Image (cartoon, rainbow, N blue to C red; front, side, top):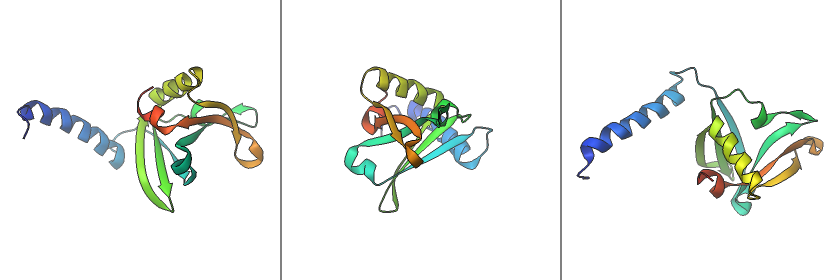
Length: 127
């Protein structure tokens, strides 16, 4: 047991409560959920939509407080990451600016969406 248990416990409980409130809808927070299927496993990237059909969309227009990214492979969940939306916007912008994310990338139906191909490791490491 840590000799700092008395300090660590309240710190941990604070964030346990934050997650519990998000997952049980005890707040008015909104969560946008995006699921990545299979290809992320080989590329290490996820696609984040920023516009569609010449209008802002996706991360650019979301009203959510939190953004959840679910990574699936062969139909099974491998990871769920929940990021404050304002922080995600800053990270994606920084990754694009520093040439760590590929932008623009066209995708979706008829390649009508414009987004960024973002390395998962860079995104979650707080770059």
